[in-house]
Image (tube, rainbow over all chains, first blue to last red; front, side):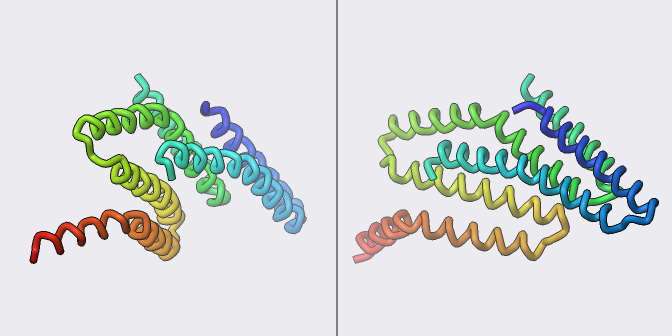
Length: 64
Length: 128
């Protein structure tokens, strides 16, 4: 539970937005949208894992 | 010094969120979600200590453990529905946020039904 996950997400976000701009400038809007989508899906998999940990902890803590 | 760590994590993620929000706003949403989860995990074991203290106090006053359990359930439901509702509000979707809050209220009422029934019994017994 350290802050590296936040930095990882920010890094992927910055990378994807830069790639997005580069692809848009070079006229490939479809690939730009696809790379953004790919970045979103990757980060979603990481975050889903954290969200399930959160719900399990809350369930254990509050005896839900 | 734990509180310093939490504030620093909050500030760092706000900065990162601002950086990412210009190009595409969905990354700001990811940063908000992951920060909320991180801060919760930092206070999770402290919360466990608080809950144990409340349980010990309730044993001394010999309140029935069922009611304390229901209070904790209501707390848990409130925390999670508040977590989701605030995130939706931040993203600008206040209608979804109000739906989540309404669902949370319904779950709270269903969980706390035994307490309400017990209250009704007491009242009917007092008033002949």
